[in-house]
Length: 307
Image (cartoon, rainbow, N blue to C red):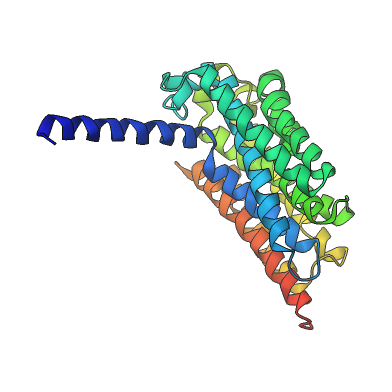
């Protein structure tokens, strides 16, 4: 192989890698990974010890594929707005690196594949996951996001569904305890996203998206962030108050939620440059750690350890 052929092959390989990276980017892998963690915890909390491996594999694969499909459809439907925002202008569809038709086909393949895998477990999980996909990709992205500054509050229900989906994947039925897990993520979502919206307020204003800092101002949004972190602290007590979780969870959730309240208090009364972004980053680790604490507490009880 001469030098020109070697360079051509290297160039072709680089292009192929870049294309697949773009397809992966459209699935929002970091977001999906966080959703899958909450789903896994929902699976584990549904049974006294650990769920069977086939349920875990099929359930997480199906939920992951459907969540990835929702992310792809979000890229498709938001491509015009993404092109106007500094945070998202580089996305594959906004830049035109991936054709819209190919992205739609990719999303449909992910959606159908995920639905079929979940159907093998039980129809309830398959349909609930599909409803969450439609809620995020259509109801939120197409309508709520552009209709009301409360978009993230109402639309947050779709993003709060994975722990419930994990629970139903194992049991095939709904449970009040599973709904408590949904409530935790649902109340966590507004302060998480509004911290980002404060940081990116000018971006949303430029794109004409009525996020709360754009329509009601940054100070009002800071107040709402503080309100929801206080509400999250109260809601965070419910798993313990209902005997769903024990002392390990109570201590862990109080520490994490008080930390979130501390970030919100500083944001409201002692704000400094970059603190909204720091609050957003803390919120991500807060949720991940909170669900890990739920799982540790559950196994602590499951192994018969007395408090």
